[in-house]
Amino acid sequence: MKKTILSGSTVTGDLTLGNYIGALNNWKNLQQDYDCLYFLADLHALTVMQDPKVLKERTYSFLAQYLALGLDEKKNIIFVQSQVPEHTQLAWILTCLTPMGYLNRMTQFKEKSEKHVKNINAGLYTYPTLMAADILLYQADLVPVGEDQRQHLELCRDIVGFFNNRYGEGTFTLPEAYVGKMGARVMSLQDPDKKMSKSDENEKNFVSIIDDPKKIEKKIKGAATDSGTEIKYDVENKAGLSNLMTIYSVLSGKTYAEIETAFAGKMYGHLKVELADLVVSTLKPVQDKYHDLMKNRDHLDSVMKMGAERARVRATSTLKAVYEKTGLVL
Ligand code: TRP
Image 1 (cartoon, helix red, strand yellow):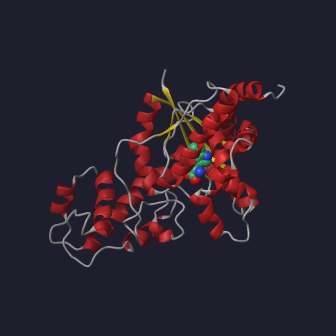
Image 2 (cartoon, helix red, strand yellow):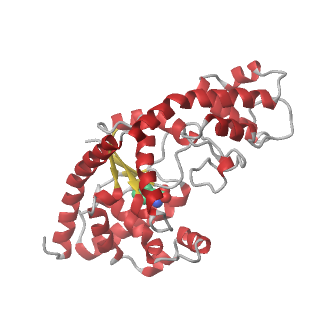
Image 3 (tube, rainbow, N blue to C red):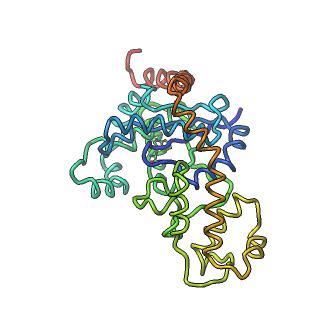
């Protein structure tokens, strides 16, 4: 029996070059070794203000981005959260087991409520209980999470404990964080001490996989580098440059030493120009595929529908067990 991995992504921002590189390295291996589910967390997106048209468009766009990056909808289960109503059903039951004291401790809630002072809604507060439902419905063994989501995963594990105390064990798999094999880490372009993130407020920090060539060029040329001149891989003293070299290395297949030799005596600007070309040409087939997919909504709809159907087979089976344990009449 393969272990189950569940990966969720809120539909905000667009996938980045970091996702591209991560996807290339991981998805193929993951789909072989694990039973993989990927879903778009559109319900979680609703915890902050959304323009309905934009939200809908983003959901299609996100699905198209994943498919364009090569995620295989037959070998993985890809679905949209809101199309599997069991998420909200289980979330309610879990919410009723979660002490407010635990939710009060969530740092993301504190941060987000400082940022969205005009919209501190109850959904923002119970966000982690919906996330727990996402995970537990599929009996996920492993969940790849960024630093910002670790606390939520911890809470999910606590919630399994609350459920077990109340109703007995055996309903849910206790999930763990999935720590992938350390691939190349792509850092922010302006602030190379932090990871490149799709939810970064500053657009200049990331290259989105659907940025047009001009934008890509501008962002890479504008990447922050130190005031030195020598092209040398040195994360400690040349974090920005080293990050560009990492991207160059992954996309070209060249080692750092080979890059250093190729650019000996040249300036940072030369590397940036070549890197921008390389990124543009690498993303070209992905972008072509993306635009084709976006023109074919019927196909995207059918991918979503198939994914939701496959997800529901599992979700309903877990929810049924939960109904039985909790005394809800099926
Ligand atoms: N909250 C996650 C994020 O912002 C997205 C998410 C929602 C998620 N539900 C999940 C991730 C379940 C993993 C498992 O990145």
